[in-house]
Length: 249
Ligand code: PGA
Image (cartoon, rainbow, N blue to C red; front, side, top):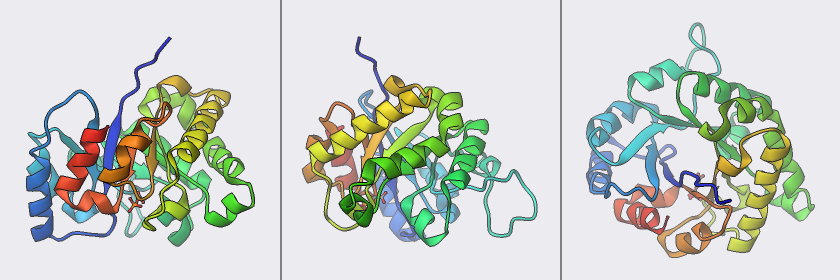
């Protein structure tokens, strides 16, 4: 039995952009064809959500944020709630990106709490997992990723196919070094097996690869049986490159 999974190409702008630069980028993105093939989205810095909403509302491209608070409201200086994101038309949010785990000390437990809050607000949580180079070299890549997923077991069970998981090996992010299609496929298959073991909707969960994806390597990665699209950092900042990656999905 073949299960149809949603295919996604999601841009992660990180802390890049300006009103002027975004206007150029968004003007390019609105030309994306409305194809059934892959769902397109961009995750923008908070101050630009309104700009993304205004530019993309009638387009084939959805928008969202790169993080959210695990709390609903209140005395959490500097944080942004799920409800605030939905007020700006966001439909998805990244949680647990390795840069947040690394620079903001986010634990897998906090990542799981954020994913649960996102789901409850009707947002698609894109749960990011991945090992460091030291962990891979120590032969612990699958163990580390399994631990990150296990923390999200409740979310994977409750959210089912509404949850998206992105595998981003930390050593491949922004380094120009991509996991080979077979390395990525092996990890994606392991992730799918782990989601099944945890009681999630393994066959229906979209699993994205991220880490130095470009137009030139996207097709080969996306052709792997367990890779359902990509999470794109640097290459999402140029409309033509992002749309070429989208076309590969
Ligand atoms: P990259 O980033 O495509 O620039 O490697 C991917 C990501 O961190 O989401």
